[in-house]
Image 1 (tube, rainbow, N blue to C red):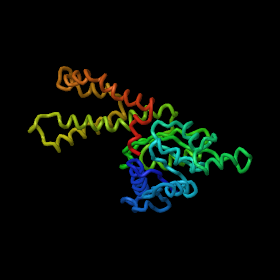
Image 2: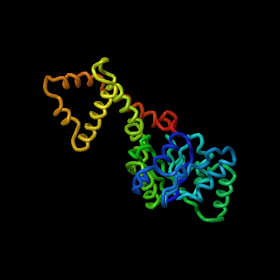
Image 3: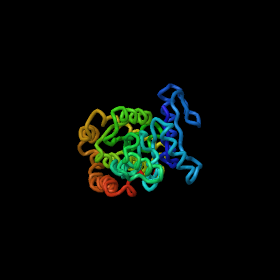
Image 4: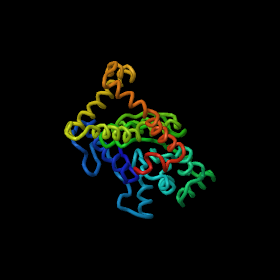
Length: 294
């Protein structure tokens, strides 16, 4: 399988590294893929790196002919330049806050493409020259855990995507973690809970690890103790519910119960953090946890 990644920022680089390493893990190699991104029948390339201007656009457009899947990891403001030349290819867009309707319009499916090539193609189609070229575009969200093969990626395909298109997008992203297909309106919730949620959870772990007075425990040991608490909590939550787990730990009148009463005073603030991330995604991609990763 040939995969082109357009965008060499943090997300593009993370996808490249994660995909190469993921296929090596799945193929039993045990080590990361070569710098060129090839592993057996799989090849992953970041397109347009160290190029500029018209030359970069031409190279990106060529990705539509070369690749089985094109992963677009650029900022929303760059989409009008990138998408028109990719029409007909299977495109997975990670642009935060940009809907499938907006993506298909930018690609030129409704005569709204930009650039001379896209305009000529649309004129030809309207004049009855050539065949209909479908917009095979999938709106996606993933998270920074692609770097270690533990991401949660969610996909919202446009109406013209086939069952095979969706399966191919799932196959690609399953190499860097779990994948689910969702309703488009659910992407913002997944972003707040999972993508931004990683940062929230890590921040809470860091705060806990630094909570005790100096000399109580070493910094390394404190970190390991907190990691154990979260890892054990995750495993128990997978097979049980939160309240029953808490009841098992918190003896009546004990130190855990006292601590939980104090935590309850900030429950609303913690929920506000998640709700704020969700509303930021709903009201605009620039404020959503994802735009700055491209």
